[in-house]
Amino acid sequence: MKIDVTRETFPLAQVFRISRGARTEAEVLTVTVSDGAYTGQGECVPYARYDETLASVEAQLAALPPDITRKGLQDLLEAGAARNALDCALWDLEAKKAGKRVWELAGLPAPGPEITAYTLSLDEPSAMEAQAAKNAHRPLLKIKLGTPDDMPRLEAVRRGAPDAKIIVDANEGWSAEVYADLAPHLVRLGVALVEQPLPAGLDDALIGMDRPVPVCADESCHDRASLPKLKGKYDVVNIKLDKTGGLTEALLLREAALAEGYEVMVGCMVGSSLAMAPAVLVAQGAMVTDLDGPLLLAEDRAAALQYDEAGVHPPSAALWG
Image 1 (cartoon, rainbow, N blue to C red):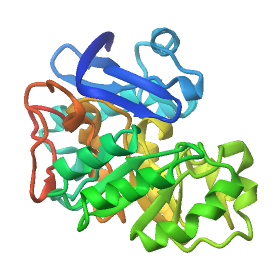
Image 2: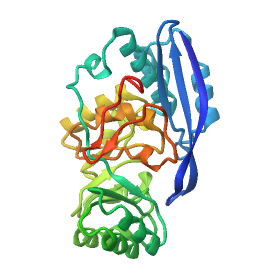
Image 3: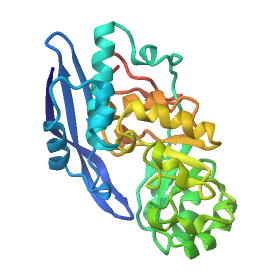
Image 4: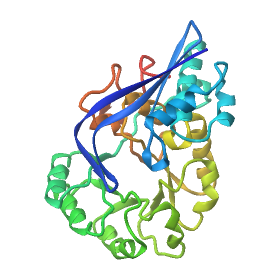
């Protein structure tokens, strides 16, 4: 089997800011696997927060044997971007060889559309209010926060979108004290969920704290091995394929998290429709779907995912799976 890795860049429609920095483009790796007759593709977004770079992920993939199988991959690579892109490419290859869709191979029901969040990047309150007003027709807005001065931003977004459901992502940017001060206001402003309020290494402070709004583990939850450390801190886990290392582990993590009583959110890095496509399968029935990466791009791939009032639709076979 031949494995090819290609760097691709997708300009964003506008600057995207979170508490850790800003970007104007999405840099992704596209992995293509071929057995000579059939070809499968997957995409990943190496993430500096997890000590990943384009070069480090390329090196991981280059070191793999050409006869790698999806099952063997789980042992040869740890959870992360490299395993994600190849795992999803191998699922795509299997589906094409079998003449079936991936959900059939995985024993899943046929998927349908899921309402997805639309992300408003971190900015000054007036700019965030304008972003919110522009997107107030959307049923679910996600706000990027994570500074000590987020109260005016929260108020501004609620003014701009008085009827939208809102979730908040602090990206590890708050202290326990800031979160405790903000929590009552999250309730007052109708926030439905808060993601990763504290740094992953300091989230023990959540134990025993009031959680009037459900708290979701993002940076604190990668794969099934993360679950034991989440008890007493979180109500929801955010499953991202670049963290789980692909669809294979993402489906297993969803099953395990639900069995332990967690709700599930399915999120993404900023990537193209190819990166979102496998995650749509994981998002079926999730408490929150956050697969808006392609909506933030100036231009997407061919055979892109369909987004409309029903949400994000499952991929066509021309895209993936």
